[in-house]
Image (cartoon, rainbow, N blue to C red; front, top):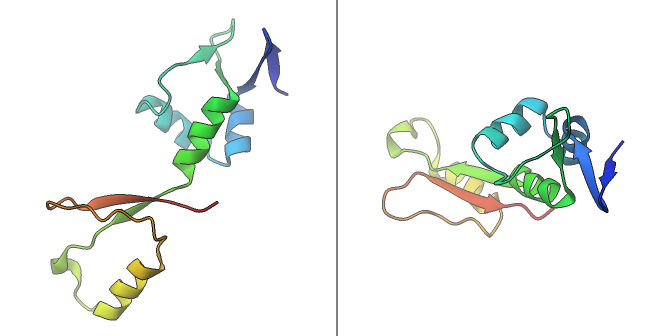
Length: 109
């Protein structure tokens, strides 16, 4: 059950993970790499999450990571399958330039 302190609603880790539909391990991994820049904790030093925090977590959960295939790994793949796959991804895909091999797209959820 969410906690209300000083007019602000806070969610515990288990509530945050249920509301954002991600695993506990994923949530802690994202916190470790700095997805959230600030941390709220209760008197027991347990993490608390605001609605804003949950929005950031949900936005990260909605991202799609697209790894561009290295041409040397295309053995056995038909070019049309690769093009069809890329065409089926959201129109917001940003294909990187300059030899990078990872790009991100936002989902339309």
